[in-house]
Length: 382
Image (cartoon, rainbow, N blue to C red; front, side, top):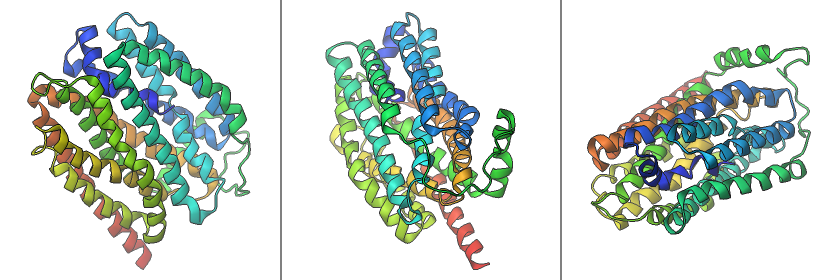
């Protein structure tokens, strides 16, 4: 389910060439996908606090499958863009699963379990990039979406058998009443976020973190396949394989964050990430040197997300899905803007533009993480 949004990353130059559009225009595909995801999460994810997560996940998976079919048969750019945008709207289940799992584990294991789910997300992104690059280089980029559709059909059929219907937790504080309608449920998000402002702050930090990730990788796909570098789209996919380190590192980072605290862990990881981002520009002319900052960023970036979710997933189970909604909406609005900015910056200044955007985002991330830790310590002292 996660992979569907990221097939475009290594093949973005080929898709742009096929539809005869420029860098800024093709950037609308990942940008609107992420913004539509934010809208879908805002309108649909709160339902997870009232209805079966299992049932909702099945419906959302069907929506994803239908959207992929539209992309497969699209003959023009705008139809392909529409399919990708609707796909984003229905890509909700991966973010529903974090709240789903948090209701089924002990509080002291929250970081480790959240990290395991994040590792699954990373695996989806890794498969998307590596697989899409190879298929597009040796066969055809459109076949990527044919395969994705088949995988989603299989996933949708499996969901009824692998998801439980009820949470173990008996806590029902702030649970929506059965008589509350849809709009009351969605609007209940706003007073909850006022009561828990750390959710919005964590969402803003993750928006910067994910924005770095997207802008760098979209720019990298254009950079490596440019005449100056001269690599094929398969190389972009192979390079994404180095992100596999995060699959092993993220669960350990989550367990470490359980011990040192979410805010402290996030600040430490954001400083390390800034160190990697600084290397993007001076190492940009060498494929092998680029591996160094990418390894750093792929190792600690998911940990920033995990520690951000930990700041509120220990609260009452009955409100976690709605709190996750606020976090994810802020995250994906920022990520959508960064997706467009990444391709536009490359069209404006090449790889230098991508490196500048990543540096500004990373420095801001460190400052907000330091501010969040300061607020946490101030609250604890009172």
